[in-house]
Amino acid sequence: MTATQISIRSLNYSDLPQVIAVERRSFPTPWSLAMFVLEFSKPSSVCLAAIEAGKLAGYLICARYDRVWHLMNIAVDPDARRRGHGHRLLEALLDRVGPEESYTLEVRTSNAPAIALYERFGFRPAGTRPRYYQDTGEDAMIMWRTAEMTSTSGAAG
Ligand SMILES: CC(C)(COP(=O)(O)OP(=O)(O)OC[C@H]1O[C@@H](n2cnc3c(N)ncnc32)[C@H](O)[C@@H]1OP(=O)(O)O)[C@@H](O)C(=O)NCCC(=O)NCCS
Image (tube, rainbow, N blue to C red; front, side, top):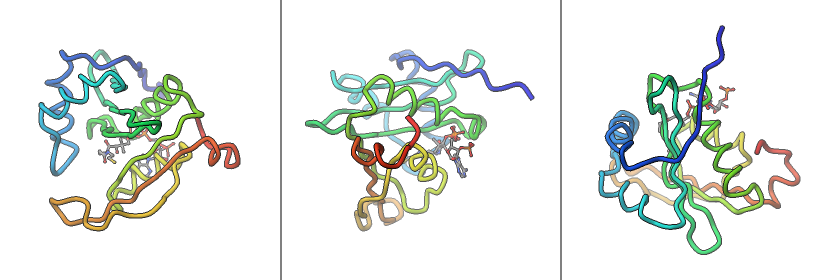
């Protein structure tokens, strides 16, 4: 079987129609166009695209608040999942920002695929935010990845 050819580059404003299409196919309560534009406009944001066969297959948005990087959004088109795009996006983030930096995120406690991906990159659970998601009332799991944690676990990245 031929390995999937994935390339990673910065997201552009011209990617937004494809980003919105993937977003709507990925989340019960998708981000609006305005939310993406806001994140794009922040100087500290890292916004990455995963490209397969010339087409946007996934994206990642991460923003720095104080000294901590917050993974704000990551999604891969349902038709392109489980082919390594999520892995490559997180790998590229750690390459660009630095594996020694501190990262945090929130994830639905039921989102096993995302939690498995994050755990592979050394993120670990660090509490919950009860009823964080207004659409379903589901709890959020808070996850962190710090240099101290990964130096002892041998995590990817
Ligand atoms: C989470 C998501 C981004 C993963 O993207 P992906 O491109 O399918 O992930 P990858 O193919 O790079 O998988 C990397 C690893 O993550 C884990 N993983 C990914 N999908 C998984 C699944 N359905 N079940 C179990 N583990 C999974 C595995 O460890 C996998 O490695 P492996 O394939 O060698 O076993 C994708 O499922 C998605 O877009 N989900 C909807 C949006 C979402 O929930 N985003 C996260 C919000 S917090």
